[in-house]
Image 1 (tube, rainbow, N blue to C red):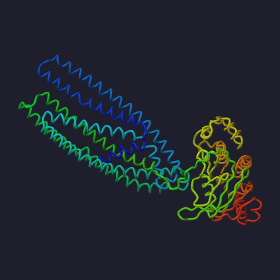
Image 2 (image 1 turned 90 degrees about the vertical axis):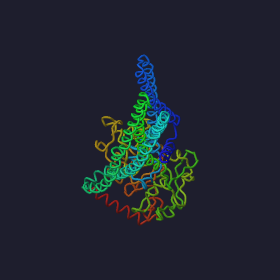
Image 3 (image 1 turned 90 degrees about the horizontal axis):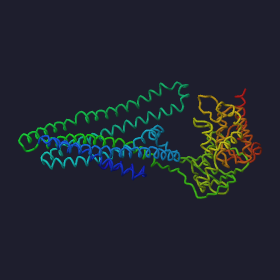
Image 4 (image 1 turned 120 degrees about the horizontal axis):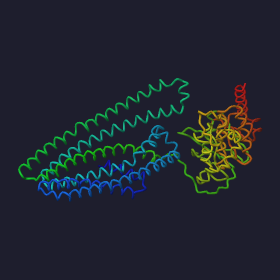
Length: 577
């Protein structure tokens, strides 16, 4: 019982609103279940008046039938209403909580597979309302059995004791069976998660998987997991077979013995025919109620596994979480300063005593060889990680002192791979700003408005890979337009031209050169065309700053910077031949 009580407590902790509606579910469940106990009374009454050959008295019991069933279906309707209301709340609100928590704790994927998280968010939450439903139905099943056993004992103590012992034995065997079924069910879920995780990765990289002919090897890898799933599934089905095909023999053997005893009592005049019908009706109900209650408890155990998966996500807390501060000043000028910043991961130093300054209305390029720490600097400014020591300042205030609203509205940017949702251009931009005029203004500024207007559906054009309406460069320009709609003072660009060609790079260069007039631009790049745009350059090598300052001065004095520009320019020129 403790296991079921813990499930109920966890449920209330995860979804702690609408408790009054939960109370209504239990009350409506209680009354309609109690109402289901009343019809046998009317049945016994009809048998009694027939035995007495008093046909006129039958109408009283017919009226009782009607009242009992009106009560039953009326309160059942109320129960359905509460179920529907709670289903909406649990599904939508808990899913929203999951999405928000995952987005704020992206390191969760270091602990849980994406397949498991996706399955939990899409599938497991559908069963939350059934936890409440099963809990209320199981509790009412216990109450109904107590009432029925009380009726048995009232009419014949031996019948009552026999029914109680038989039912307790049945419940004990079925409860042990439930634990075994739940154990194997949890195993099937575990291996389903692993299959879905590989499948999710496969879909994400489907083109590479097909081009490298990896399907056969992947399928072979999945077969090992499928085999383990099959073992768990067989264990579950074996115990379900025992549950529904072997254990019930106990009840039906007991049922035969009880009916023989009741028949003996009627023949010997110790019990009237109407009492026989009443007790038989209630014993049949005992079997039905017990079976239903056991099914509810089994489902409750299985749903508890789903609930624990949800709780594990919501309870996850990263030791890398970064709190926001209380500075609510939204008048950001845009000066960024790194002062003796040190950062490491698992004891490995990534940034070593890094110091530099980024000015408004300028483009500052962070350059260096692969692994030198360039993207780490961008990630620190996005607050994806926290420094070990030193300080990062915006307008002389630590970035950790600003409120979330102020910081997120003033620091934005674009990553290496352009990403937009598979929806219209207007809907994508509306995720940031729904004002159409400002959307058009942003698209004009990045040079995409005329092209969008030339499309048959204009801003209502759906963005997807199948349409081939947008090149990677055009998608990147749209992403930049979306970043502009945030009205951020500081724009960060991490290798935004690495996946696009020379012509698109030139277009992006023109946009960046324009944006610096009213923004602080900070970018990571390996392309000479973008490096040449920079007013200032910070050169990193093995996590340390080896040169910084005006672009021309750094180029003249830093051999590493000369090597980067020369080597990269040569590779880019070769691509364009």
